[in-house]
Amino acid sequence: MKFYEFEGDPALEPSARALDRSADFRVLRRLPRLEELWVTSMPARQPAIRLAVIDSETTGLGEHDKMVEFAMVKIALDPDGQLCEVGAPIEGLEDPGAPLRPEIAAITGLDDTLLTDKRFDEHVLRDQLADVDAIIAFNMAFDARFWRTRFPWITHPLICAQKDIDWLAQGHSERSQTALLAARGFFYEAHRAAPDAWALTILLATQARDGRTIAANLVDGAQRTTYRVRAIGAPFDCRDALKAAGYRWDARARTWWIDVEPTRLKAELAMLTDLHPSIRPNHQPLDWFNRHIG
Image (cartoon, rainbow, N blue to C red; front, side):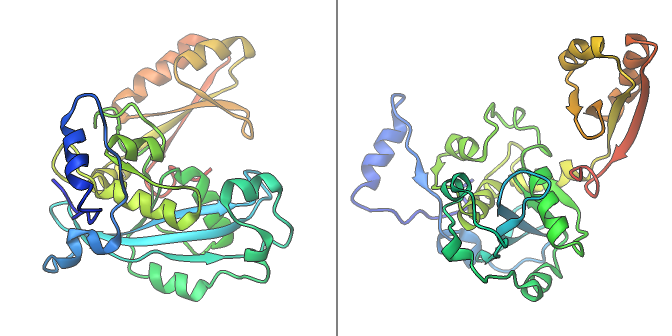
């Protein structure tokens, strides 16, 4: 089901449609603009949930790096899981107090002249988030770290568009935001926060296999309870077995861990007990408040 009316060059559209019908070509279209979304002209429906779609640019990936740009798009879903409201992106810049490294400037498209003396407007951000039920980012583990550090008053539930949905079950082996959008027929120019947040908004508005939006499926996936299992005390010679079982290494906690569904928890704990007598299995319940917080 389409959710927009593409206002491209009318002279080129017949050629694009002809290519679309061919097995030899794929056509990628630019992202729909706000005014092209059908929800802007639909009768208002009472939203079932309001979401804030966010993206961030930072000075790096380290513990002491800072967020220098954010963007946010507010959307709402109706009780049928369809997009019923969408707002224009809001964005902000902030001076990190030190020059950007050349590689960060190249990645983000930002430079020191754009950031000098800038400060995020927290009053605007608080106002915009006041009626939001949950926050979505494509890689929420990354964004949450910087948003919670800079804005510790934010306590909303968090949704990760990369991990809180089974993309393979949706027909996608792709894992990046750019690749997922390309698989759904769109292209865009990254890497500033506002274009990235808008791109994620469009991805969320596309249709999932159940007929609802990807956003609605993400809300369902984020609210489920899962468990983080840790292999406390696992010796070095268990490393290959744990990696093969899907465990990841937490360098700060110095343990191997994996997230599992409730139906797998008992078997996972038993596997660790059988793997080595030194392993002390530990498990922690996760939901959309703590799943993506390091």
